[in-house]
Image 1 (spheres, rainbow, N blue to C red):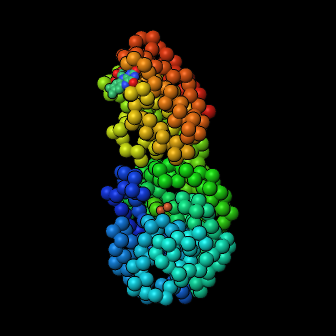
Image 2: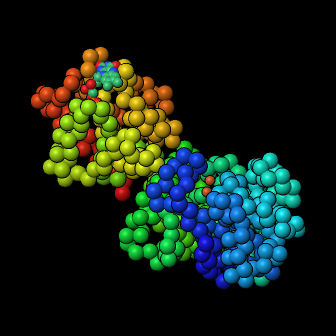
Length: 407
Ligand SMILES: Cc1cc2nc3c(=O)[nH]c(=O)nc-3n(C[C@H](O)[C@H](O)[C@H](O)COP(=O)(O)O)c2cc1C
Ligand SMILES: [Fe+2]
Ligand SMILES: [Fe+2]
């Protein structure tokens, strides 16, 4: 765990977590940070306390000491969001100190009680204020369904700092650089992709609510955005607001000027056509990403499809249906409400086919509303005439995807 001052009287504590499945599902290749914030006026508040993944709060207490905060003097625990990655230490804290108040929304209050048995709770509503003294004034702004229904922003008026919790967050561990103005261009790119990974894996289902939260952030006068995961934006907070808006468009079918090939092949028949398509994309100078399933993690798969303007699905028939790892990937994209993508599918079959029928069913059932160029199915190995059709499909995709590009 590390500590940084982000403004006079405001500190961040941050720790890297690796080798976990985030939410019990996501293999996060580059880890994640958990950030907590301490605001000191005459009274002290801690926003989104962090314990790490092991449930041991000692690291938090030790680090509080290093920034001159005696845990005995913490008066308020601000719970922006009840998910245990932000609130999991409350019960431990209650064991060592009894006279503090949890501050949260009404929906969070119910969960703080049911998860941790808390009853010293102050429920806040839009615009409510907590004056900590000495110029530190917190205001609260619910942003329902930014991940969970209970979520709120906390805003410090004196320093104009927005503590945004999951909103504007990113996966990816932080080494020495935790502020936007310290990031190298490579680190900026790294956190942009980790932001896309976070948005697409964790938040995409809630895109309409995230758009409302973007509007609410815009209505506040912001000097710095301090999220629960990832870097703090103090030089250019507008950048992460704009990025999140762009990500919300990716959820509705827009994407970067790149193609993703989501594919799988049992005996290399479909793979022959994939190789052929790679040659076309290289010839046309189109950036493309390869997602061979099931080898790639679901986290990587969702983030990569999410950010692409054109999707190629290459998968054969398996037991009268779509090759299961690719079917599973598409179902997962449907659950995340990744809609409106431009796509083209081809694949091999042996005798009956059936992959195409299931593909349509998945798209329909999940109301994904993907825009498909006519598919190409071939018996056994792709013949010359199949490759001609596949090339035409790829070129049509490349042409049509121009309308989807938002960089
Ligand atoms: C386990 C298994 C199940 C299959 N089920 C079907 C099927 O139901 N209908 C069909 O037309 N072909 C079926 N096939 C044949 C494949 O679709 C065919 O071999 C195709 O060329 C595989 O392409 P790939 O080498 O890219 O995996 C099946 C093959 C396997 C190995
Ligand atoms: Fe969350
Ligand atoms: Fe979180």
